[in-house]
Length: 429
Image 1 (cartoon, one colour):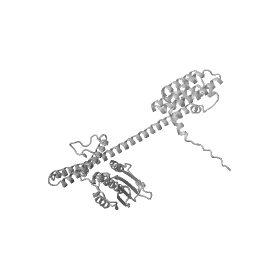
Image 2: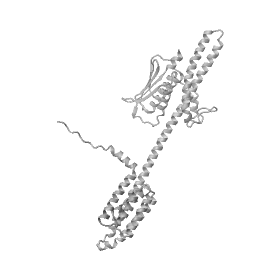
Image 3: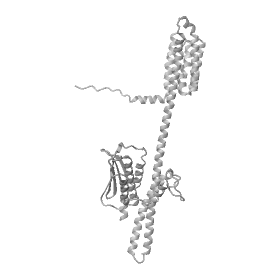
Image 4: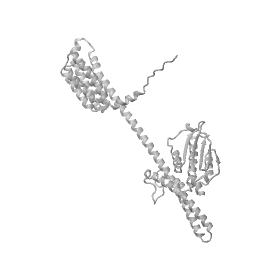
């Protein structure tokens, strides 16, 4: 027996339809005007009240332009309503346009204008009540005033309240959208500032690396010149050292220039020829300036970094796999900073009982870093900035490497980085 397929009703098209109608407001108002005009013309022809035909057209046509010209459209229908009172024309379905345009006036203009429009409508209701006074008295209804106020003034008050509420909601949502856009702009600006500051710090550190390489080249060149006549082998060794150091310096200089090209627009007032790079940078105190003048750290200072983390209360285990290779100072600096930032994030976010481990693996063409912890992982509270990860990715990308940060399935966090070391092998050769 074959079961019949279920028929499901999807509402996926409702938002699209609403958006399309929102983009074509005049079409919506035109349909409303046609509906009101149809009711008025049917009444006029059916009851042989042909004076209602021009009145119906005069009342319904302004509905098409109610959003773009709310004050003008309201003025036209009020004038037509006044003529109806003067010429003793009874209310008809097109008179509902007065309520529609009062709602529009309250929703799309200022409250002062809408209150004036409400007052005009209430005066018109009083005039119509006065015109019907004799007819109501003949029916011997003692509550004629309450009935008249309910039939004429009540709808006007309801239309005004609805329109004023819509105006308030529209202003509230516009304020929320503007605030969200401003927060998004501020977030982007903070991210750009953080990236620019990180690039500036990397550029300063690379400057120290390049300066060190150049100084080594100068010393080797002086030694080679001194031993040129007496010791050719020593001179040959000095020239080989100069060549290897020069290649490494060129590699570091290319990376430095790449950073500065990205940074020239983000920090137009960065360090000039006559002032330090950190001078005038907001939030940089004398301690930061002193730290920027310290020797550039690397893998050789890894033990000191781990001791600092342990002294701060974070148990850290370190494992080294493979045969250690001599790394270019820029690559060694990047590895050091990635490990440092990862341990800092562990202390900040992993919780008081977390433990960390550092794996340093040397392969034939790269050095791999794996920093893990058993802390809170994805459940940790975050400040939302993420600038530390941005800095790690910036550093790794400068040397053709990568950084991957993710939560561990069983709890905790893992930072994995791979930094190529082909340049180091070429320099060693």
